[in-house]
Length: 156
Image (tube, rainbow, N blue to C red; front, side, top):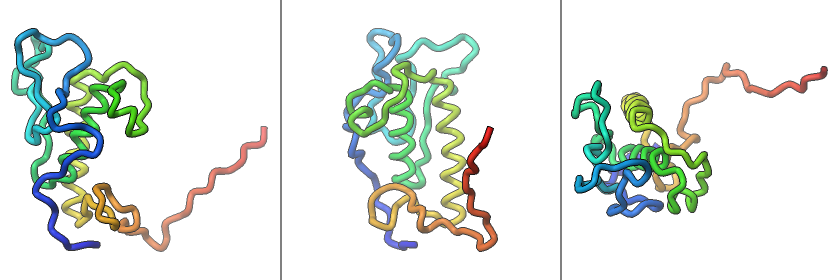
């Protein structure tokens, strides 16, 4: 594994920093929309909030410990919120054009944040061997006794 220091901030190759993150669905007029370049939290005050949600629960927060993980999670959130956006399609991600609900995206990002913390605790860097952002599968430990999965041919 590489021991080179991580960059302070990683720019996205797919989404511009000034791109509004909530482009799909109903927005409240006159309320500022967070942009992709915001690395801490994306407050969703521009979206109608259900009565059973506190304002503090109506935002997507990203880990600020690792800039590469932060970028990847922001890209995932952007793709889930704006599945038909030109930059998402140009990146080769083709999913159903319906955006995910904000509550779903918040939950997914929270779970991936836990995964990022676990990976950092195990010493996995979020940078591939080639130096480009992304986890290098070559650095994953594989136990010698781990079975190799081979799909079997079903004969009916």
